[in-house]
Amino acid sequence: MSTTAAAASPVTYLNEKTTVASWLLTKDHKRIGLMYMLTVTLAFVVGAVFAGLIRLELATPAGDLLSSDTYNRVFTAHGVAMVFFVLIPVVPAVLGNFVLPLMLGAKDVAFPKLNLLSWYVFILGMTVTFSAIVMGGVDTGWTFYPPFSTEGSDSNVMLAGVGIFITGFSSILTGLNFMVTIHRMRAPGLTWFRLPLFVWALYATSLIQVLGTPVVAITVLMVALERFAHLGFFDPRLGGDPVLFQHLFWFYSHPAVYIMILPPMGAISEVIACFSRKNIFGYSFVAFSSMAIAVFGFLVWAHHIFVAGISPYSAMVFSFLTYAVAVPSAVKTFNWTATLYRGAIWMRAPMIWVFGFLGLFLVGGLTGLFTASLGIDIHIHDTYFVVAHFHYIMVGGAIMGYFAGLHFWWPKMTGRMYNDTAAKTSAVLVFVGFNLTFFPQFILGYLGMPRRYHMYPPEFQVLNVMSTGGAAILAVGYLLPMIYLTYSFFKGEQAGSNPWMATGLEWTTQSPPLPHNFADQPVVTEGAYEYSKREMKVA
Image 1 (cartoon, rainbow, N blue to C red):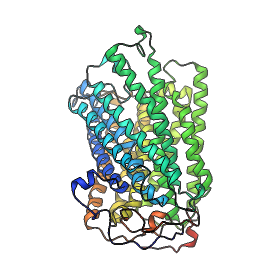
Image 2 (cartoon, rainbow, N blue to C red):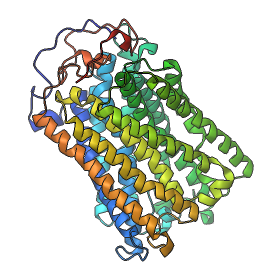
Image 3 (cartoon, rainbow, N blue to C red):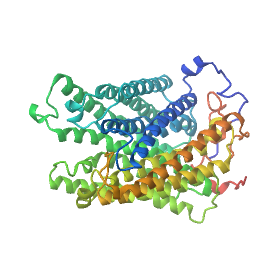
Image 4 (cartoon, rainbow, N blue to C red):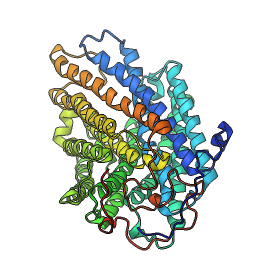
């Protein structure tokens, strides 16, 4: 992607002003992205601590570490922290905030003040929700199904619900901001089919955020009204229908799965193109597959409630649609593989994370077809098979994709390189630890072990001990980046403006970028991935 960007000055957004107030009042999208990174990392640590308690409890079949009620609160806290405050915001709010304007050749997002507001709303929502956890927790599960949430629980259901309600506005504001930025602030010459695929993924994600998030907000409001005003939305005794909650909740929450996975997919496209030194095979198909996933994602919610009493005819339709939504994901996977074929593969750390993503996402995607099959779903519903499938997609896919993108753009974000060997070691540990943690759970689920139980028959202990051992390896794999990236931030080798010899506009300005990104307005004259015109740089 050739441009007319001028040489960057030595002044960076990091040393322009370094007071606390300058960060807390900043309108610079790059600083806001870094603040999101710190916030999401904190939420990840909280969720990981609860995950560790879950695995320690399940190492023995007797339920001798936590009581039943405490275990309910622990797995609810783990799910709430990870889903709402890590998986949904981690790539759009962190990487998207930092690199989207750079990739578009813009000085900032369309609404910088709104961008800062979205972070404050996120902080407020997280504070309220975590207050519910600190004050005794919630025992309903992260899905808040009635009647547990409406009358069956005396835990802090509504405090957590208020926090999640508030957090939803952060998601809406970010999505709206990104859509307007992509439409209105592209550099001259940057047509839609010259956009990087990460931008396409963020655009598709923003559509889901803007259209889907109000539904879950209204659902939480309905739970509150039934809980306190006894309006009969979900209680059959009051004329309500408990399955209505599941329809409303999953109408948002299944598209939310694509909020979690689409941006990492976009990051994967950027890394594969760069480190195979090739244009993405079937660029337009990959771009439109992101939009197709966003649209189809709103049509498959009822596969979560095949056993909840919906008609068999409806279930057949949703089963078919669920198989159909796998097609655009398969298009991406096949096109990534075709891009790698006969490419000049550069085996640096971001690429190792990509290979880990491909392996884990493939397993997660294929096992999703089992849950979409009506007969098989009856057998594996609410078992550890579903837990394993979900984590292979959300953690194995989304978090591996996040780390691939983070390691790719880290030199641009900080101006410094990290230890490549340590980063590769971390990727391998995460891949091995993740498979050891969650693959045995497919077997446990098939054999009939239900999820959310803290006691189980002794014959399941061997597989649970494997999962707990794998979780320990996984924890080390996730701890390593916190160490070597922190060291890199302060002591790492200078990266230069483009250490990967990449083609995006973000690589044409200095690292870290100027406060307003570019000294001169860049002008785009070619496609996003013209690597055939660049020499391979081996370091």
